[in-house]
Length: 234
Image (cartoon, rainbow, N blue to C red):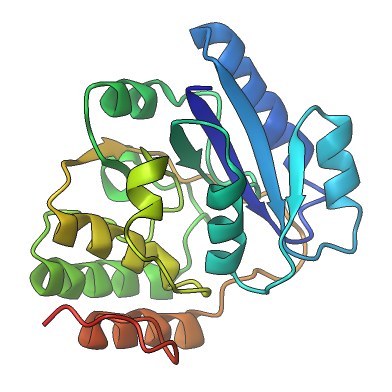
């Protein structure tokens, strides 16, 4: 199988079906040999059932955390390439053309850039509008890469290459670790303009700006997974 479209999921009953339908529409339009994989991280609102009913394969990941869900999904993916994205409606899975093209062209990692693609009104809190560029700037200096948006949740990569990076972060800082490790490995990294939409959930966001921002900062400064004794980059 060439592609796995991977969606980490925690109580996304309101939006997961629409995201799966978008992804399936993209698969059909591009004629991809692909699967849709939902990595459920302990949902109690029927998200896993809804995902299965809409044609996705579901893997249950008991260890809590954004990174844990993605690591579990990457290990279970059948595709040569993984394109991952949040299933809260904030990203358009129907337009993955540029990600697929860049991966086929030899990119090891393809990262979305929301600041080039556009941010819908109300899609990004004010604190994130200055916090994301600040942390991304620090990470660019720390890891020697030109990636502009370290926190964009829509990205694609070579699965085997990712598995060989020793990824360890289980929280939101996984987003920074993934780019950092690919940059350290010298793989070609491409950036794709990506529109950020206002998510479709009505409940509380999974993001905790202060806590998650500090986790990202700690990873940037230490170059390792918190509390895991991960390898240092210095």
